[in-house]
Image (cartoon, rainbow, N blue to C red; front, side, top):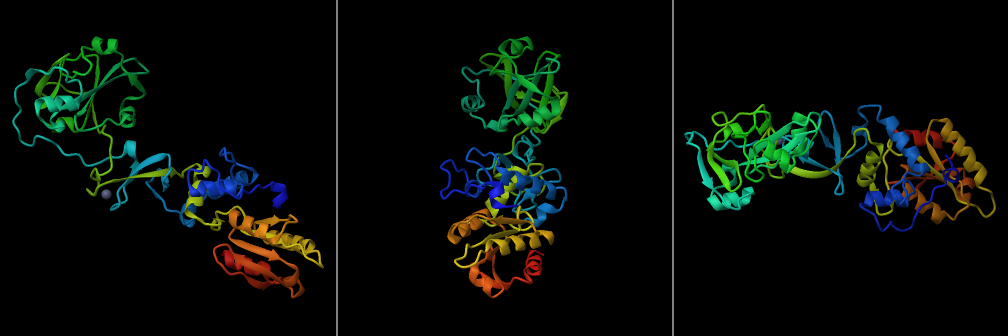
Length: 396
Ligand SMILES: [Zn+2]
């Protein structure tokens, strides 16, 4: 492709709304606009990446930092829009809201104590309840109440008080839900802030986290404002239609597979999204001058340019070389502008093709062109005759 046909617009300065260095360089190099819209060059690059992605092994060839599981691959990026739980020891990786972690049963071989109704004024949160009774949160059960969208069924959820609900895990069990209204809560025989599954309407769909059946003598709501029940026990006092992992993992929770503390990593999902992949590539492959995209991810393997001469017209030999390189199957971005060498060098560095080939007056007199790999500081002269073979061997 020719530079002018793509109408590439590079920028000297990073846009002031830059979220990451990689993104700023994609804008400066003219792949994206400040509004994060793909330009012609961007579209062409995304199509190229989509084509590459048809080969399942392509990610491994892009020198990208990735973590993942059999369904999804992520690239860690500080500004990423996905939170991923990752085990640094066994590499277990999962979206945070779906991540499993090792949970500790509570109560051990404690005997099941009799239910006891206690007055707990102003204790409508787990914190206030645990403080009031002087017990740890893991000795309590918390309730969350929803209504299922497809059939309007009341869904009562219980977790141990030290756990947070993952709505994603809950939805995976029961389908789409919304928060229950006061009226629906009362209708099911519960009381907001003081609810438990004990004595609930039999119509309710009771769903409990799998820690509940292995935790004993928990304090739970009495379904009456201002009152709780001590020593509720799953199986004796209530049961559930669904027992499943419903708890949200957090940094430091033990990996379910090996026990190592989990890390929470900001990342972007690479699977099926070429724009995310381009962002990850830009993040991983750049220096202070611009992008340093690796072959085969770069949309163009060669940045070909001519330096306007004083005595000879360098454009025709550059055009001829452009045709020869393309005929050999090499993807070329030909900077055909009548610009100063410095301007073109800067743009070549920004756009980040793996190789730059420069056709200049002085070199041409000796049958040579200048060859510079994007990542090396030095350039060298190479015979114009053998340049196609040389480029091919470098890209191999
Ligand atoms: Zn692990």
